[in-house]
Length: 230
Image (cartoon, rainbow, N blue to C red; front, side, top):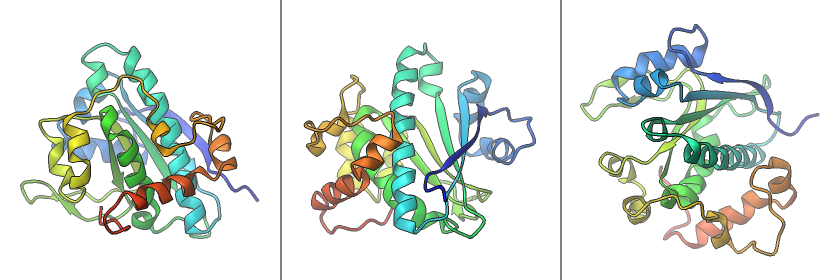
């Protein structure tokens, strides 16, 4: 039985399309001022993966590995873009639960992978959004936001004038956000794996080193209470 997510589709998001993610993106343009401009510039993307049948901890690791691979590609592609596309570029990892129910708890599935990615990459000027099927949330103006029809991680550039709002539950990362800039540095060197031949563009390479558990342990050691609320 396959133990890794299976890539189903990758495409530019077109708000007029009838697939689930495109329809949802069109519905929430009223809540996100960057979605429609990103769509108009052709830099709004979705990558759909079918999750395997596995325990939660295994799925969390796989989501983290996908997040790292996509974030490193995001950094490379962003570097090559010109303004305004550079600032608007948005990549979305859509996760389809297995038919047996593995991965149905989207909040638990995304919580740790999302926080680990934030901890590693905020200083590089990258924001991550986590959204799960049926999530109930309100806007800054207390207006209900349409619930997502699927689980997904969203990757985009930091907007320093707006994004501190999203760090109210992760104030320990606020300084990284304010000072963020992407100089192309390997943000993983801080973990202490310089001696390993770790390929950040390869899920298999990270999986072979059990890298998720290494990063999880490192992050917990650097947190006040070893738990998260975001």
